Structures are given as C-alpha cells and as structure tokens.
Length: 308
Ligand code: ATP
Ligand code: MN
Ligand code: MN
Image (cartoon, rainbow, N blue to C red; front, side):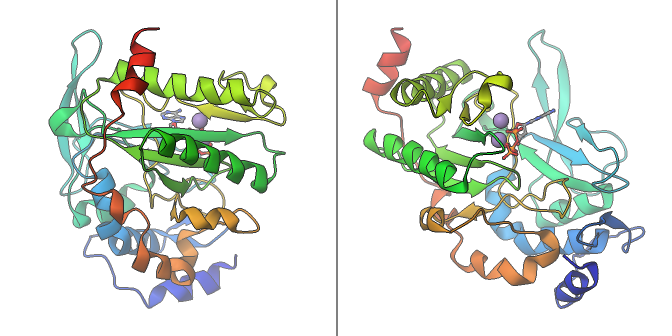
C-alpha cells in the first residue's frame, strides 16, 4: 500500500466531528494511516459497528506511537478519556469493583482515534445483563502454513454443525490469520454454561477430524492444524469487534463476510487506509441480520453438556 494513494482515497470522506491533536500523526507506517483517517473511518462505520459494541464493556488497544511501536490494552476508565466514553462497574472474582470502559455513540467511537485506539474488543454480553452472554464466538486459529481453502472448509464445517442444531451463525475476518464465527443467542445461559457448550461443540469437531482440529492451546501441537479456540466464551474474555482495525502492519480490519465469501480464491484483506475500495460492502452488511436476532441453543444440545 502506498500511503499517498490511501490518504487521497480517504480525503473524499466526511470528517468526524471530533477534536484531534496532531490529525496528521501517522498511526500505521505501512499504509500511511493517520489519526484523522482513523477518526473518519470510525465515524463512517459507526452505524454498522455500534450495534455490536455499544453498551458492552470494552477493552481498547491503544497505540499512541502507532502500530509499529508498543501498544497496550486499556479496560478501565481514567480521567484522560475523550467525551462520550462511559463506564460500567464490574466486580471481579474477589468482589472488587472496577469501572470498565463503555460507549454508545458515533462521536465517542470516532473519539477513540484521539487516544490512538487501533483495536476495539467487546465482551460477549451487555452492560444490562453482564452474566449472560448474547454472543458465542468460535475463534479459528490456523497454523500459519495452512491454506486459506482449508480454513474456509473449517468455517463452513462450524456453520453446518451449528445449523444442524438450528443456529444461524455469522462470519468475519479477524484482520489476522484466522476467522471468527459468531452466534447470536438470547442471554439465558451463564458464562460457565456458554463455555461448556462451546467446549463440547469443538470437542465433537476434534473427534470427527483429529488430524485437522485441535482444542488445546499448545502452540507446538498446532502444526498443520486449526486450533478451535472456544475460550473467547468466558466471563471477562473479549474478541475483536467487527469493523475494528487491528494494530498490525498495514492497518487491516476485522470485517463481516458473507458466507459466500468463503469461495474467494484467497484470504481477503481490508485495510482502513483503503476503505474507499471496499466500503461498498457496507451497503449489504452481512451482519445486519444479527441485530435483534433471538435464537436459543436447543435443550438437547445443552443437556449433553450439563450431564457430563
Ligand atoms: P487471529 O486471526 O490472528 O487469530 P484474533 O483476533 O482472533 O486474530 P487471537 O490471538 O486468536 O487473535 O485472540 C482472540 C481474541 O482474544 C482477540 O481478538 C482478543 O479480543 C483476545 N485477546 C488475545 N490476546 C489478548 C490479550 N493479551 N489481552 C486481552 N485480550 C486478548
Ligand atoms: Mn484467532
Ligand atoms: Mn485465539
């Protein structure tokens, strides 16, 4: 990516109504992404992104000096946050209450650019019902050497198995090497139940195809395989939000895909700095249907987990 070209692409965009110090500060060298471009990007995707991040606890990855320099996670509010950032009090295991970051407006989202936020990671539950997740996430983590075709086959496999128990699921790139399959559910299970279900689900897949799938985190055993990471479904765990940029070279984003995108000949990469070239995808945002969708894991599938 040439920074100049990308920057030109984004100049046609509406500027976000937020105050930026040093708007031309570079946040990603590879693509020439600036703070202004980041703010304008957040502003442009807010309508599609907010339904998946609003009114949830958020972990933010801040890179004040850009993606090539050290970045850090921030979960808790402090005095330095831009306008519109709220807080939600959450007790940890020991009952200690901490104020977590949360937001609900496009202005607040765009304002994250001022803080150098290159990644937004929501909880899988909402502030109003923190103990009951409304999203299950299957995080497919392939060994680096694995073909895109093999990874897409695995995502299709997850989808098919979910469908077999009556559950619709949604796909996105991660901006990294893997894919995420997300299942919206009515917030009825508690976190341990959700995790148990996800664990059992991936165990079944591993049993069916042990030469391809792995359910234990061991990096060394991942050679040629896909780690089915079910641990996103734990209280306090997060996964990167749809439309979130990533703090990686080139400034890629985690973008909702249509299931038919699995037929793409290679892994698609969408960069913030090249937003003009792919923003047409927002016209038919494949995750729109997720908003307000109410579906439940069938009792039989849960019983298998509960009686183990
Ligand atoms: P990839 O496709 O490259 O795997 P990913 O976003 O799925 O991208 P993972 O390493 O699989 O990356 O992590 C999954 C999720 O776990 C992340 O999106 C993030 O929300 C969370 N996570 C990972 N590492 C940390 C960390 N150090 N602190 C907090 N959350 C983390
Ligand atoms: Mn992953
Ligand atoms: Mn993972």
